[in-house]
Image (tube, rainbow, N blue to C red; front, top):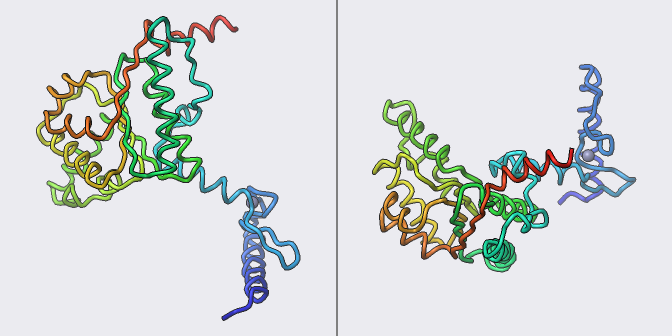
Length: 267
Ligand SMILES: [Zn+2]
């Protein structure tokens, strides 16, 4: 076995060669001045991983999780209960608490039950789902944030490719496999869409798989359970009820409108 100082020595040599060739190619610009993009900081015989590596992996996790720059800013701390009036505030507070509790429970037990946020458009459901995603990503949990209509479009496109012989069987594509097996799956906006028997079937098989392997799902929808039943079928809705704690969240005015108003008043 090689000794640690030998390894460090050969690492330094590799880096020197790489930097020499970069210099010759005229690429002396480094994104990280701490480690000169080596990822490692050498201090005599001590080597440590540069903080930029950790940051880089966090950014990659966000990228894989499908988190948009807007959602990246959502957090429990900035969830504003004062947007909710009267009895709605109590509901929103319970939903916020449920979301926080889910993150804590998940970090203790990965087979914890998921959540379903149901209620008006613009009531803060996506915000809570985003805040959950961000909290978990920071704890190295693999999260996938899917906007359901986009996901179904993508799934259909892959399927069509498969039909013309260009692609693979839909069940074999990494798209669906990844969605099935990711640690925490977020299905945002499971609403009124043009569900065909085929898409209903795909959603059922996805949820059924995750139920069997006790992998949590976070769902947001502006439909009631009865309406979900009607659009997705009873067997899918019954899986959702088994897998998720349900929180209702309503608001008198769309929060996104209130925010715009608030922004204007502040100017
Ligand atoms: Zn660095």
